[in-house]
Image (cartoon, rainbow, N blue to C red; front, side, top):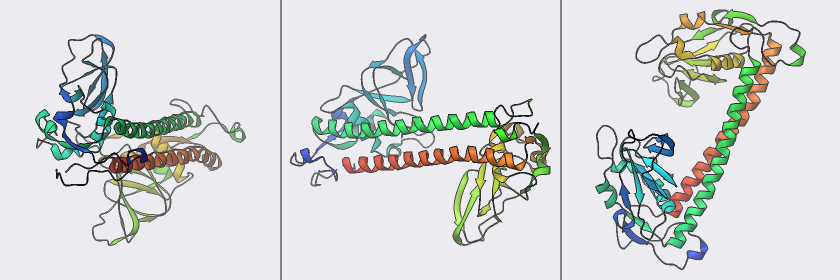
Length: 367
């Protein structure tokens, strides 16, 4: 790291404008790194155990008590965690302790500003070593400014967490609607029904082959770049200049991700890994999409390796459905919740981008 570089971040709180440049320090000068240990000799308890992938279980003893910025030693090495209180970490997760002129929460956000994959030391499963982590140089301010930075980012984290809680509540609400507005297994009428349909009797059972046709995706590589979206079983891929279908469609993976239905509308193209539906009979495309969401598609998997579905087996699946007017109201009710979920997801995405921008501005990048 160049000693001649202007060591001042792009964004700085006004009260620190006159505090001068930041200092260059190695991580070895700022904290010590602790190794995780095996927990299998411990009994069940209320002390959380963490690995590089996050929380695992709870035991009756602790490895450390205090605040700590943690980073994966092996596996998930690019997902820093902040732990406080009593905890235990396993061998895949390093924890930090004995901080010198730096705050644990500040180090946690500093860890988030680092591209840890650059320090990967393995060709297979990503891994880090204490030696290499200790050698990383960073730019650091005095503890008072660190506290301000950590407090700012913590408040944003709390806001993101609150919006995630709201998103979880909306997803739970949708799950409840789906359970109540569609008949449960072994029943022919839903638990909750719109008043105007209470006397309409049982829903009618039909096979999918009676309700729609299944279209196969095709290769897109002969097409030019354009504005028509191309979808595979994993979702949106890119955009081209021609369409395979124009209209509303419930789509389901043919191969790969077979348990993630998509609702497509307008002009679109699908590749070979994604089936789409068309030519609907006595049913609404979006109603079929919600039916698809209720199905455990992995039960219809036909392969031992990569999951896959066939048209013939999909056509054999039976479902219950009411008349079109009732389908419409059910779709409207669930779609309104989907709109709120989408709005919430966008809000979280924007806040996350804002946090990323703040981290880039509030920290000086390592070289």
